[in-house]
Image (cartoon, rainbow over all chains, first blue to last red; front, side, top):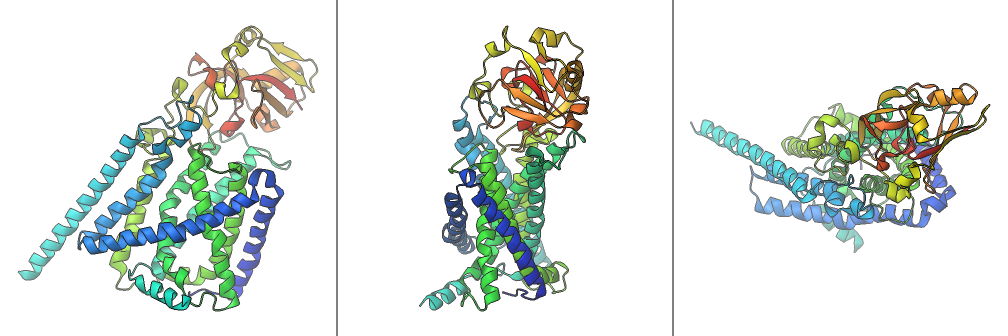
Amino acid sequence: MNSDHGARFRIALVIGGAVMAYGIWGVLDDARATHPGSLFVYVVGADLVHDLVIAPVVCIVGWLLTRVVPEPWRSPARAAVLISAIAVVVGWPSLRGYGRARVPDNASVQPLDYSTALGTVLAVVWLGTAVWATVRVTRRRSNEDAGNA
Amino acid sequence: MIEKTAHAVERRFTSKLHDERTAALLGMGLGITFTICFVTGLWSHLVQTPPSWFSRPPRPAGLYRVTQGLHIATGIAMIPILLAKLWVVYPKLFAWPPFKSAAVAVERLALLPLIGGGLFLAFSGLANVNLWYPWPFGFKEAHYWAAWITIGALIVHVGAKWTVTRSHVARRVPPDAGSGDRRAFLGTVAAAVSVVTVATVGQTVGPLRKLALLAPRRPDVGPQGFPVNRTARAARVTVEDGGATYRLTVTGRVARELSFSRAELTGMDLHQARLPIACVQGWSASANWRGVRVRDLLAMAGAAEGASVRIVSLQESGAFRSSVLQPDETRDGDTLLALEVNGEPLHIDHGYPLRLIGPNRPGVLQTKWVTGLVVE
């Protein structure tokens, strides 16, 4: 793991451990608001959802991209998929209108048509990566031409 | 059996990007963004619930707008970095044996609150700016205390990884054959950060508002051209409440109690100020407010100079039905009970008949539908 378990780690452990203990005390002390049991489920659940769902899915998609898309298209394709996925994550609550559903009389919450908005963002992302891919391919061809000459 | 499986899984991660240098560089980015979020978050907590030793500074008037805008923008920018970093180090999950020594066991155990806490903070923060609460606990308290636990776990992690990260960041370890792939990958993460930032930061940075395609708020959309957090309907306040029966009273530790109708307030010496509404959820918008100075009302009532004042709303329930102005705030000439915004009487959703607006106060403390000032 290439970690350092010397004096620095031991000092960090004491300080970090104390800070964590303070946080745990806070959760328990304010239990009526923090619901320690369900907060624990959410935090550990986030670990599990990442390790058992998100990461495997990302690895499988990455592996498929490697198989399906040849170089020099691969890095731009990977970029387009990755950036699109992040944009969807960030835009998801708006796209689904979760906030607006909670306060239907507040027209200033999630005021846009988010399918169009997200579509526009994705179009820009794919256009940008297409330009990058074209530049890569052209440059590689001209390098090959130069090598052949 | 488990050992075999673990080794088999670990060997399947063939990408050169699952390496120390990529992890170190992304870890550096996370360390910086997480620290910004933690500090700005603590600041927000401090100004929203000031302990007795702390006095909220009314100047600079736009400070909270900047710190909270930074908190939300940094939190959103952190999402791609966090996910990229977790993907890079994912193979380590299958390292066998899992605990080579007590130190390794402690270090790995701290990853549970670090990763779970980091993901929880990012998710709950994103949900909260969208007014989405798919959980039973209070967002503010859970987000606040989870941040302490996570930053503690981060300190432990940084202690373990300081040496290796520094050697990579300072380029004491020479770049290897995989550096081209790494540049493309880190460039992609940087591009993802840019995309989500540009598509959301316009909720507080006015000139970029048209680009805020993924933000839940637009600073120019709402009644009278800016957003609303709690509507009058949600607060159960009606236009009639601001009508003939409406009174603003000044009571508490005063020489003489005062009571005004809205017409009497309108006839007073009105003051104008351009101040932002800066919401904890990361949006902000500036407006021109016109109204009565709080310090003028206090002088009329013969209150002691530099008193604290509780501002009480017509709203009957809710955590923000009243708020306190601290001495430095009541002294400030721009702390107003506003009757108008941008040249019009306040919209009911913006606090008609009267709302508090003061410099450098979080949006939730800019109490709407004000009916009472209680001098403390």
